[in-house]
Image 1 (cartoon, rainbow, N blue to C red):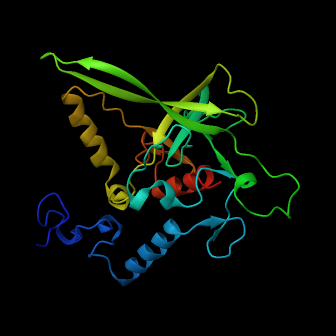
Image 2: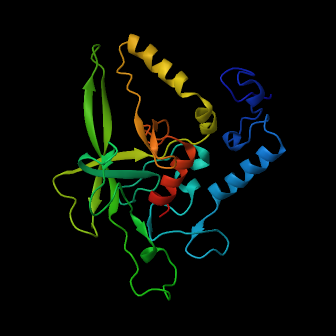
Image 3: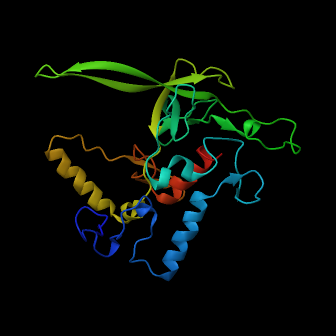
Length: 260
């Protein structure tokens, strides 16, 4: 029996994908024209291919320090990442953001003076390549692991459940201690499908939703961020904390922080 992959049969109209396998969310919307489909498949190729120091069978530009060597390593099948399965396994599809108290010149987080805005736990020094071109390979900034803190909660009816919360563990910092002012934020790679539709939503519509949420008792705090491409302040909408204003800038930031 065929199943429509949407909230209800045909709910997405001309955007509905009529398949329900593991790759359903990796498909282009049927409504795309020929040239849009070509752009989609080119982008999906970049998303899946491995980045390298010198391009052979992949993309050129990896390193010197990074989180992963391809986008699809963190965003599994365009979906959300996963935490490490074992205590001695380093973070891969999770990142540890870092900053110090205060804000930068545009009101955003203030980068750490030694480590920037994100710790990168992989580097070319340990990436199984030959270093004939340099005598000084750059090490990874730190080793990053995940521990869990368990808490028992009792419900009103007496039922008891155990909940656990992730706690990042930072070891072998390469460029000195983080210091007492350091603030960290653990984040898992989010899903990436449908982001083009989010970018098509007008700023006025998002602000109207925020106003409606205010009447329900929510804080409704739209996040205004720096648009580095257009040199102005804009409404943020991408990332866990809406810290990027456009897909173009979101991809650029990921290329720098995640792929080096």
